[in-house]
Image (cartoon, rainbow, N blue to C red):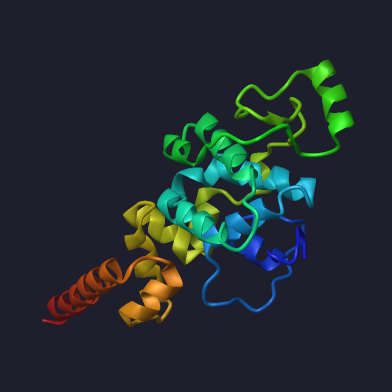
Length: 224
C-alpha cells in the first residue's frame, strides 16, 4: 500500500499516477476514478509524496472528474467516518487550476488545519509565505507541494489505458460516460450498472437502453 489501507498502488496507477514502478497486479473490472480520489483525500497526510502527485493529477485531469459523483460519495462516506477537511483544499486547488465546477465542494473548515507538523509549518510560512489559494482555516506554506506534470500520465496516455477516462473525453464528465463504461465492461442490467457506477436507477435504465439500441441499429446498418 502507498497511502493507507484505503487505496492501493494498483488503483493509483490505473487512474494515471506514476509511482516509479511498472509492476501491476491483475487488473480488476472496475477501478473508479472518484472512489480512488476520495480514498486518497481520506488519507491525505499519510504520504506527502502521494499528496503532491495527487495535486499534480488534479492539475492535469481535474476537468474530467464528475463533481456530482464525487460529492455524492463524500456525503455518503460522512455517515460512516469523520469528514475530511481536505476536500475543500483539493477543490480550491482545482478552482485555481481553472476547473470552476469544483467550487461547490469548497466549504469552511474549523482551523487551523495543517498538512504536517504545525510548528514546522508556521516557521515555513514566516519564511516563505502561505499558499495564496487556500480556503480559510488551512495553513500550508508556499512551495510545500511539488507539482510536476511528469508525475502523472498525460491525457493521451490515460485515454489509451483507462476506459472510464476515455469515455469522459467522448461523452464529457457525466453519468452517461460511466454508464457506457460499465456496459463496455460487461455490466448489462440497469440495477448492476446503478450499483457499480453510483447513479440512480433511472439514468442507468434509460442510457443503457439507448446505448444498446444504438449499437444494434448501427450494427444492422453496417451489415446491409
